[in-house]
Length: 153
Image (cartoon, helix red, strand yellow):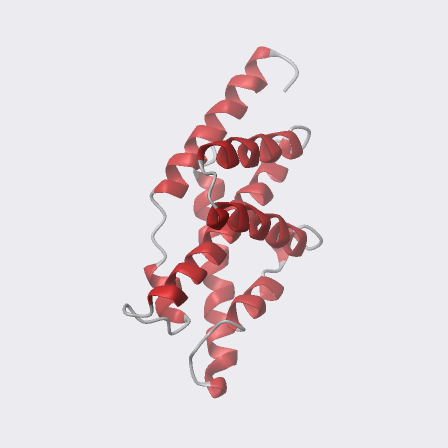
């Protein structure tokens, strides 16, 4: 973010992602993992996991579009989010975002299976369906990544 043009593009990417995150609907993901409507505590936990994942997917998209500024932009987003949301749940969510980024960073957008396996570990579905759920999650994570990447700017 050295000169004015990248700064404007970076700010636009930050604002676009904030809007995208605010509109995030985790219904499909929760359904895939067998989290029911009346499981309020479980839904809240999984919404935190999924929000953290979305933030990490955005960081992955930043690495592709803003390779020089991605780290700075990510840290700026985390800082602004923390300032706007000072509760424990939000702090946990930001921690999860960093952890998901650590899972995604080594393989980039080539393989989402590690993250899918991690999410699958939260599933309440029949263990015999784990492979199917894992595959569906891999495909869904790729779809979400593409959506985030396409709406980056």
